[in-house]
Image (cartoon, rainbow, N blue to C red):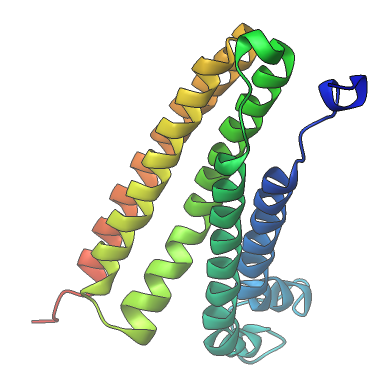
Length: 206
C-alpha cells in the first residue's frame, strides 16, 4: 500500500451536501418571510402593517406566494441534507488499528451532518406547519407536521451524539452534548408553542 493511499483524506461530499442543504433551507425561510422585511423597509417611521397612509402592509399579501415557495425550498434543503447524511453514512469508517486519526475525523463528520439537520428542521418547522396546516392540506396536518419534524430532529440529535461518542474526541463530545441540550430545550419550547397556537387558531368560533 502506497503512502498516498494511507494518508489520503476522506471525501467530504456528504458534509458538503448537508451544509448546502442547510443554506437552501435558510434561504427558503428568508424568502418566505421577505415581504415582512420589505414592508418595514418601505414604511420608515410608519406602520409597516398598515395598507394605507404610508404603511407597507400591502406588500405582505405577497406572502400568499412566498410562503409556499419558501416552504418548498426549505423542504428541498432538508431533502438535500438527508442525502448528505446518507452519503456520509456510506463513507467507510476505518478501524482504530487502521488509522485512528482518520476514524475520528470521519465520525466527527457524521456527527456534524446529523447535527446540522436539527437547526434546519427547527427553523423550517413553523413554515411547514403553517403552509401544510392552513394553506394546502388542512388543520389536521398541523400536529402531524409538528410531531414528524420534532421526531426527525430528535432522531438526528441521537445519531449525532452516538457518532460523537464513538469519535473519542473529548472536546468535540462536550460541544455536541451542550448543543444537544440547547437544541432539545429549544425544540420542546417551539413544538409546544406551535401546537398550542394551531390548536387555538383552528378552534371553531362559537
